[in-house]
Amino acid sequence: MNDIKVEVRGLSKIYRSPGEDIEVFSDVVWQASGERTVAIVGESGVGKSTFLHVLGQLTLPTAGEVFLNGKNLTALDDNSRARVLKNDIAFIFQFFQLFNDLTLRENIYIAARMTYNEKEAMERTEAVIEDLGLTHRRDHIVSLLSGGEKQRTAIGRALVKDPVLILADEPTGNLDERHSAEIMDLLMALQNKRNCAFVMVTHNRAMAERCDEIFQLEHRKLHPLEED
Ligand SMILES: Nc1ncnc2c1ncn2[C@@H]1O[C@H](COP(=O)(O)OP(=O)(O)O)[C@@H](O)[C@H]1O
Ligand SMILES: [Mg+2]
Image (cartoon, rainbow, N blue to C red; front, side, top):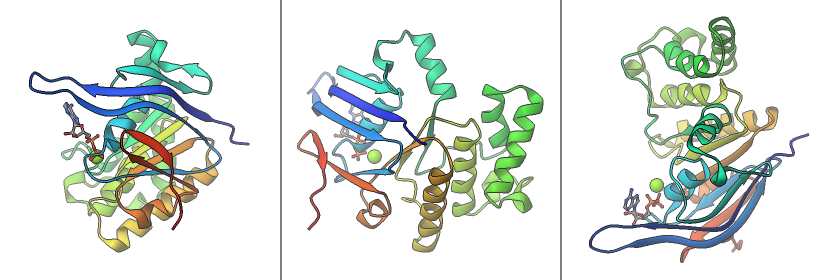
């Protein structure tokens, strides 16, 4: 059973800059369970990436707390937070953020090796490559792969560490319609099979509708999307 819980309380984020402060969201209370895939929608610039980065510990909130399975991540010291980020949280980005000069296999292996010893990292890398149907491409340099293959590689890099929480920021934003649909099929199928929570942000309503639950970030708050 997938009983993973992600929760935020009183979450606020202000970007301070000399000219003006930007309050992206304020006093957000929200929770999601790993049993259901979650999409967060909102217009460009509304703060979707910022929210995901705060959830995933890439940046700290100005106020409030993030909990993963009851553990207050915001209260951790830097080392413990880095460990959670390394072992439990995986990101998938719009522009893939792969090492373009390395092979598909090397990209996934590097992520695996951060958590596992050489032998286990190798075995997990091969298993993920097979799972994703990328065996025939595994020794190709990433820059020579198609967009869809790059994103599948990035999904492999996320999955290989067996994360508790997968966060995807516009994962189909750089792909055509057919490859977007394929990537969403893959993400939904994987989340079903694994004991992890999946939260995706997108400005694309059709992609969001593939998830079990949709929330909207608007006017600095996050609320369940009313179906029209
Ligand atoms: N590191 C930063 N420093 C200052 N302002 C930022 C930073 N990152 C994002 N912003 C601002 O915060 C707001 C939300 O940005 P973002 O989270 O990227 O929105 P979205 O992902 O919904 O397009 C925007 O006004 C953006 O310019
Ligand atoms: Mg964004």
